[in-house]
Length: 66
Image (cartoon, rainbow, N blue to C red):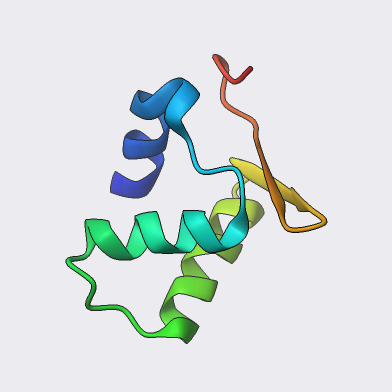
């Protein structure tokens, strides 16, 4: 998944809020995604265990996550 690879490579520069994460994902797709598509991609990252969300904060579960 291109989104996962992008987030892993960003390390300390990863988005910390859900809205910022959604904007970052949309930028990868040249700002062409609808809100429902963005929400679906964020949920897919959660379902795959790459992230979790607590009070609008994104927590990353990558091996090198801080």
